Length: 219
Image (cartoon, rainbow, N blue to C red; front, top):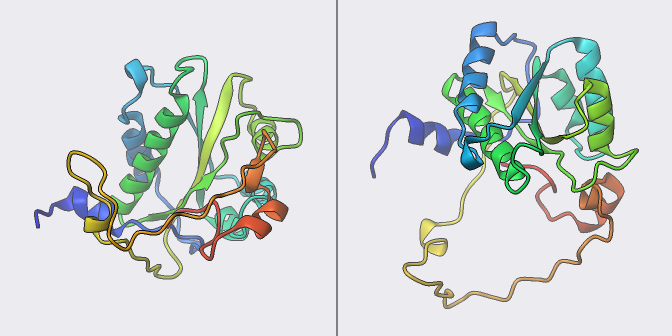
């Protein structure tokens, strides 16, 4: 198999939810943000804004808001750096969610390449209704009205090693057209949320619907 540092960083990246107090340098943060800056976007609209939260009071306030959508909010709040990926929806109305997601993933891969750990709390909701996590974070960080938060990325040194696995590539790849596997089973239908805002991201609803792996998180 062909391998190189980029492929290694992709393969070894894990979602970490507990961080040490070891600081992240300004140079490391700048390199991570530079990776986000070079993410692709629709028509090169570059709608991103990256809010870097270092002040303990801001990070604690963010953790208090994030506790509504993730059980790992304490770990997120203690990470030395939190990067909020926000996008100006007016700059690319049709693709701003994808633009933000690609930039957020670039941040995570860059952190991994520097020997740092990261995670991802998905924040985006179609409507930033009053009282929602999106609304609360926008107010805390003074984000302009057209902006929508896609994710909050904690960055730091992992406190514990995180292990995960992936399905075999042969189960995911189909040549020319989709070919069901011989032992494939119909996937269980998921009941759509009637909430046009945070949906299943709110913890009470998430407890009822979440799968064995914690809902709303990447691994």
